[in-house]
Image 1 (cartoon, rainbow, N blue to C red):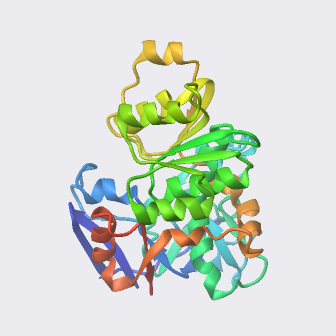
Image 2 (image 1 turned 135 degrees about the vertical axis):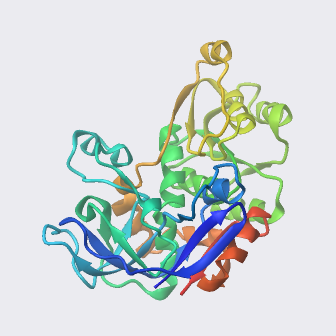
Length: 340
């Protein structure tokens, strides 16, 4: 089968690799319906996360179950399934508390290579959710988005306490930030301020539910948010970048007693303790517990209530994975979909 491997900074190759096989009783083998590139994949692509040997990449997936191990009971061959970027057993105390991405036996799906034609999913019973029947082809991008970027945007909104009557700011206009806008809208936010400098992304943010656009960044962005909120700041801020500037922008845009949901993979972030102490801001985030949200998100997608797959603004043949990475790195694409 074909699979993407990353050999070093900006060195993406599509190679023939062995087919995955059942290795544990709880495994499932899935034939992927499509693959995609995530913004977090770019940390390694840019060389910020060093690569010493070729690595598998990708952690978002949906497709049709081909084979299951002897202990798997929740899915069967022929089911169309969506899973999280962390495999989880679904039974431990952490999973049962609503945080399967913190499972005591969590397995990173990036190690399995989700940018490939076939995928081994460990802990299938606690990781995969079957759709109600075989979905129409046009729903595939939307279901693929649920595997990470939609679920992560959803968690950012939940962690930030988004709800009816709230004013929300979203820091980051990548796929996660844009779907954080969609999540805030679905959760009833009254006002949603998207922070973006890029017109196509601004347009999609508005279509997803943004009521205001702020183009400024850093201290200027914070000042603009304050101007829009009578000097108080927003109730809830979704941080979807992971840099020092974006994190501080999120905290300083939030009113005293407000909430920041941070889901950008953090790189080089240091929080000034005294500033944080006097801000009265609640911080909550980390790897999104996507599996906990999948049943709800899948229902919203198959009922055509939401269309999160609209963040895929570039579609390429699988063999052009290198161009998909380059387009996202150069911000020529929000999110790239790869078809086999």
